[in-house]
Image 1 (cartoon, rainbow, N blue to C red):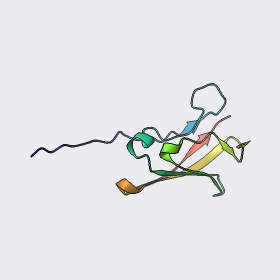
Image 2: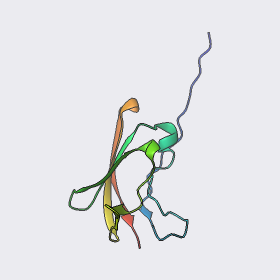
Image 3: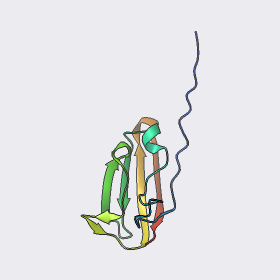
Image 4: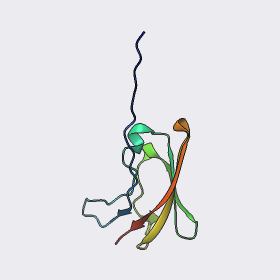
Length: 97
């Protein structure tokens, strides 16, 4: 009988991103989340609690827009629900333009 321990990659929540088209931090996504938990649900809210985006981790990242319109530079909030690991995260980040 063999026992294996599989360690999931550490996930990291960026505190800011800059969607300015320079190819550096143009999207907000949780580092390693899609690889470790592709079915995790990520929800982005504005400062007033309006839902701007909801997606599975495997579906991509947030580009700082809502209905095709660029959102202003300010703080935004996220929820990440990882059902398969029974984990739930909340926090905020800054969109910088």
